[in-house]
Image (cartoon, rainbow, N blue to C red; front, top):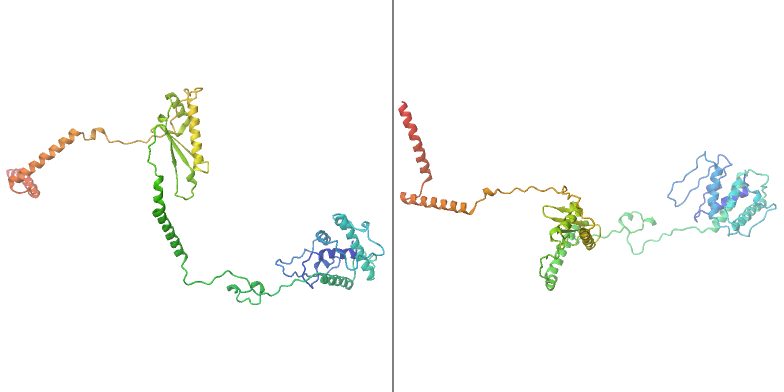
Length: 415
């Protein structure tokens, strides 16, 4: 077991890591695991974490060794105690260290190892000056008053060396407290700005701001139409229809300044019969190369590209692909005559046409017009003979009377 001097050295390593705040409570590092039924609480000021305690089943020596290892990493060995290091009558060497202390000792640098041994001997000398025989108390079980006195002496020295932290009550200058800090007059942490602004009664709502932004946008485009658009007249060029030398037709998609993923897509169409310097055999080879991009109903090949970010890049890629297809079609190494032209990808749409027999020919149109004109002339002649226009009601009644007369005569004969 380690001697009380070594326990006190470990304690100093751990105390050297604490925050520079004056605390009168006893540190948990001074609690000796050899003394049963002794509980010491350590209150941590300005801490947001909950105090945790080790389980009773945990090995105290393991916890002490882990804390010592952390303390040795941060302990300042260059700082000597007041009055310099003291030397006991029987100095402590590396051979006097136990297994745990030797492991901690080996982790230090050579310079810190020398300071570590000096510190061990210094506190061993203080124990001798206090009249405590360390060799007769190998288990480190000193009486409580003696250990308490040593602990209090160490804390008094630390309190003199450490400057206390102070939080002065300084109010905010020329700034009003927020709504949530009105009831916290004595709390310096509540003296913060909440970011609240006084409501201006003359302000408009967010919906009105949206309408105002729309109105401004319309006015801006109106100015462009009135002042900037007429200046584009000098850049106008007459439309020239495509000639036979330009059989490729490129199509773009734009969304009027709005970003859209489909805006970079470019489509090219061309008719195979319009391509120059291409024989029928070469054209058939080209149709076999393009595959399902060919429409046999319109004899148009359609290709598209959208793998690049800019439309100009996609157009350049399509132009290169068409050039490669034409070069391969004009290449006479392999004509693909043994490969049939596969058109199963295309499903022709059935178009219903009006029968030719039902259509009116010019001769039939003239006949109908002549018949209508004769009927009109006949009606006018009858109206002139009767002196008045025909009465449809009277014509119907006369027709009914003519039909009913034979029926009445047959009924009389039967009687």
